[in-house]
Length: 106
Image 1 (cartoon, rainbow, N blue to C red):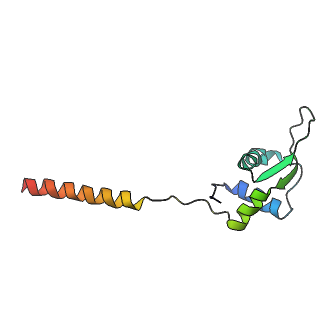
Image 2 (cartoon, rainbow, N blue to C red):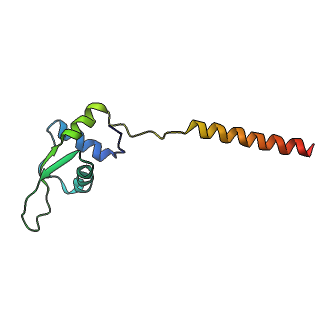
């Protein structure tokens, strides 16, 4: 599974849900991060038709969230991948141009 960039609060939510220690309903401070995790597919909650209630009840971690925790237990963010071929090629080309201009001016 590909790594996903998570902030500290999202990591905390996933860890607490995995340990069955997350409060229900979802605290107001966590709703935005919880819904973002739900969009990714790592968490879910009960869908209640209570009109204008602004609470998320029954928070739980999904199978995808458990799998992600299994593969990435420290919840490390993805690292920037460097295209080494492009980087080395660009440096060599730049040095070649500098050497050519330097030789022409001598």
